[in-house]
Amino acid sequence: MSEVLQNSPSKTPAHSTKIRQTDVVVVGGGITGKACALGLAQLGLQTIEIAPDLSQTVAAPQGPQWGQRIYAFSPSTQKLLAHLQIWDALDHSRMQSVRDMRIYGDRGEKNDQLHLSAFEAGTPQLAWIGESNLIEHTLDQASRFQNKLERINDVLEKIEVDEHGSTLHLKNGGIIRAQLVIAADGANSPIRSEIGITSSEESYLQSAVVANWTCTYQHLETAFQWFLPGGDIVAMLPLPGKQVSMVWSTSPENAAELLKLDQAQWLDRFASIANGAIKKQLGELMLNSTPVAFPLRKIRATRFIGPEASPKVVLIGDAAHVMHPLAGQGLNLGLRDVAVLLNIISKRESFRAPSDIVLLRRYERQRQGDTSALLWVTDKLKKLFSASSNTERQIRNWGLGLVNKSHFIKQRLIERALGDIDFE
Ligand SMILES: Cc1cc2nc3c(=O)[nH]c(=O)nc-3n(C[C@H](O)[C@H](O)[C@H](O)COP(=O)(O)OP(=O)(O)OC[C@H]3O[C@@H](n4cnc5c(N)ncnc54)[C@H](O)[C@@H]3O)c2cc1C
Image (cartoon, rainbow, N blue to C red; front, top):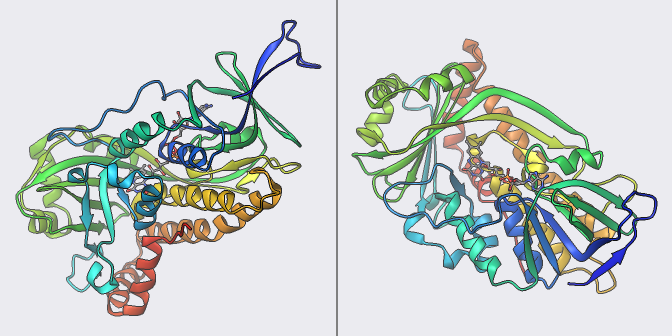
């Protein structure tokens, strides 16, 4: 890594400030930031990752207690992680493949059901369910051995972008100059606002309560989801053994109540859902983690590259888009941002720098369609199932049954859920 000593021209420091130079800076220590930083370094770019949570390797999950953050990983995520040499290094005994998805309407009638099957789709599995810290731990391990990647445990305070690159000012006083900056700094992305990218934002007025359960029946590698009257959505995702991970999207008031329930009260709540359907499918449930709640909202950045005058910054992950978790796709979409960016940079013409405007525009164009489609589908599903009039209720339940009879529509739904990325 080269270093230059510069006297900042118009800005104050009386003493000379050490400015470090690098090809790329990735800001953010979530899964998208970690995967992106590793991938860019593997392409041979001198990469620095900055986040306040990088001081230690995330511990590998162990034992019968399962992590609080559980994700559904789509095949597109599997492809990216395999490309980064992460997938085979994961502890697969802590990953559960999903072969069936069963989605039920809110009338509790047998025909109001959409069943997606890996067999019908001609694919070995529809998704995998696993812990966030399993992926983070393995990304951390791989990053330690990547000599083009340096991680700095710090917070970005200010970014200045000019036509040649960006200057990043860190909280601890460090200054870094980079050709390209990747903003993986989450839903409230400070970089997004600082470089003047606006975003549309809408609260769903819901929180998701997540908790893990052991059950007495086999889940049969099936992910269950119930749309309930009034707009609540309860998903039960299969984990290895007789365990499931619950995501219950509900009003913030009800979420606050759910967090206080004891084991017996939870069972009463479950019994009241869709005529006791949860117990029929999974048997008795025993709480296996402390429930936690996350507020839910939709965010879409108007641009994925910026600033307008001279783009040198790329938004990825939740910094670019946030969606309702009903389809379990937010992180998968963010990792497709990473895959597309890595593809574009690795296939760039030899005369183009990684921050070339043509490459950044390619990235933005390629990510717009996938992002718009997923945000639209999850948003419309969420709103359709929250509507309370009888007609809307009938239409949505009838619609589930109708879609279930159409192999063509189901195939398209599955294609969207699997995602599609290619590496050469
Ligand atoms: C209940 C729930 C269930 C979900 N289930 C799924 C699922 O099953 N499948 C799925 O694909 N998605 C799911 N999601 C979505 C998923 O959680 C997010 O899309 C994903 O975690 C976003 O990752 P990220 O790396 O983009 O952002 P984050 O994980 O938010 O990371 C942002 C990073 O930026 C850092 N940062 C912020 N500001 C600064 C700064 N100034 N300087 C330096 N660093 C900074 C933070 O410290 C953090 O490390 C779910 C979401 C919820 C709420």
